[in-house]
Image 1 (cartoon, rainbow, N blue to C red):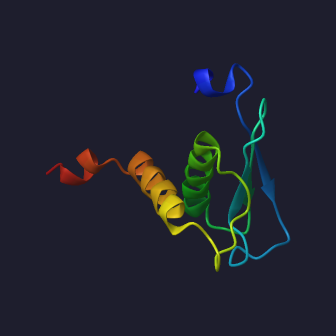
Image 2: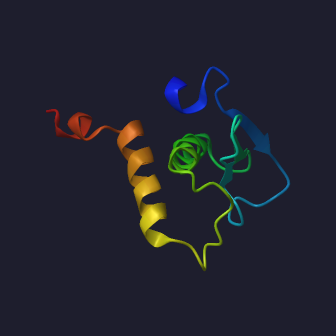
Length: 96
């Protein structure tokens, strides 16, 4: 991460007052200090997923708020896959 963002990192904010059905999170990939916003109305485990999903958007440089009706499905699926693999690595699923 240091190579991507230097020593400043990513600002992560939580917001309220909007239904999680309307927005779960957003990413703003402006450098030198990108921002992730997470909806506190969402369940904690869902918020964790959203943080990694949005972080992937920042790494890809595709930050912003996606319109769920007009979004790049390929990028969204990739961000979902990265978040899922980070939170539950495939190797953990294969252990007996």
